[in-house]
Image (cartoon, rainbow, N blue to C red; front, side):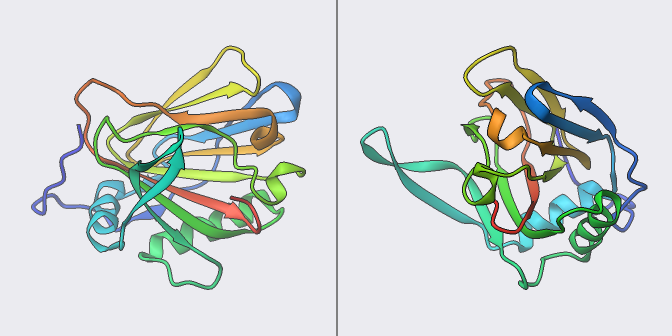
Length: 201
């Protein structure tokens, strides 16, 4: 469980060298994972938790209006990001992948195990037809990010937290789905930082 302390000697958050482990998936999809990519991840978590203007959303599901089970914030192109470490992360990702640059930053704040996100792919916009990349950095307590082939199949589970990075690329958004499932076990809060290319949601 994550516990931050103002008395800890926390390093200034920054991105380490990016040398991820790649897993090739079915149907032209792949994922890269880099454990502990961010130094000072716990300090970054505390800053984002306290400084980001989090929003509680509601949406129409199951023939009624329901609360979205997490807090969110979206930073569009040109908006100032809430910490310089996020600018460094985006620049490092752009240099490493040398393809379509990452333009937007979305964030989800999972307050405890009851907060979650259902199975989905980021297929609004270009993700519905093109190969795209989505990079996710997790700070705070570890939570499972699960992936499964669209239409059914064996799922993969990655416990991400404390500065871990997972990048989904190739056809992943069209041919696979991902989720952060609810959990009944005691768990601390986590923030997911999502870097996306232009016109990918």
